[in-house]
Image: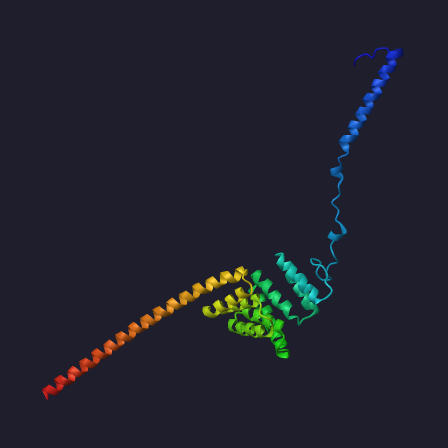
Length: 266
């Protein structure tokens, strides 16, 4: 430890001033090192980000006012690839309205995406029955006809889907999406010419409908395969017919020859 020199007079005054300045600078430096404004910013949620009230039986999803609200919520979950929450929302809708056909239809779609075929088929079948009941009561309900067509398509009843889509088109102004779906149903039946016509209608209504443009090209390729197969079948059938005719002629000639020899012997 260094000895502190004895200070007197003006020297002491100057020294005290220097010490005071030194302490002041140290204090400022110490304060500045602890007060990082960015470190104190809170990430607490704003009111807009606060969770809404949960559904009574399912805390994983918010609570909706009615069945339609839960279906809308389920559609949004599905759009965001939150499939489990979508299933929950559709089930909540069905608790409030067990006859809600659209909820069954959408539930079948999500179950299909999740690979749960049994549950998907059951939901689709239920939606078909409910929509059939609706269109029976109101044959001019275009929305019900469209949903019924989709339900038929999802269950593999493609001809029934075609019939329902065509009926729906008679009840409403033509739209590109319905013609596109009709084309898909025709494609499933390998009726490519009709599919081409439906996709072309979709493109006439919406020239920028990219999916319809791609589907039209696939339908053209499918139709070409069918036509080539048909021509090959006709070619092979004609060849077989010629062979059968030739064999028949040979048999006839042989029989005639045998008869001629028999008559000569007599």
